Image 1 (cartoon, rainbow, N blue to C red):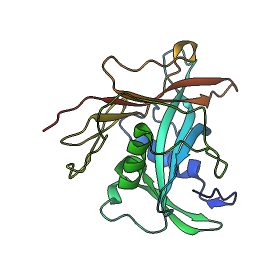
Image 2 (cartoon, rainbow, N blue to C red):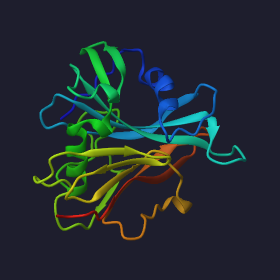
Image 3 (cartoon, rainbow, N blue to C red):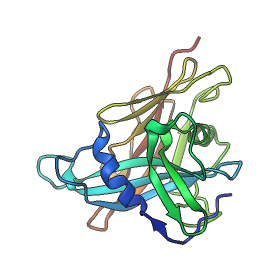
Length: 229
């Protein structure tokens, strides 16, 4: 069980994300610096208790989802927090911060962290449960998971996880398992009823808060069948 420490972070998570987000291919803003607010998300527990795993939703009021400017951009940002650098993941480092209890922490784009990938697979397979973002030992009942696959998301035969960003999200693929797609650019679902793409064998949905205070819901992640050897 992850323990949530209510303490100081220097810099804050939003301060770390402000210069990092514009470097992503799915970033919707322009030349102006993003204006970020924490809008939702959830956590997963690392069984070893070493790595913090957070799926954060942030809104950016400097960018809009459409030309009318009526929908500020919302992003899903999976992050992992470690007490030491992750070997071979220098390209995925978001930044470092000083935690008031735990000391120096290294924050990574969690899509490149094998601990996050393993626990996200466990979430789909029903072997773990989404946890509240701000409270220790409190399941998040608003995160809904569906999985109709007939095997593990990432099998023991998979030797390496490939991570690919595009204009809408991030795909995690292996040589044997399905395609796991994280929706980095979030879109509110009509009537708060997110529908996965046709043919999907699993999906995760969750809520977030819009800048005007209203709550909405959308797809966070989708599993599609992939090539199998």
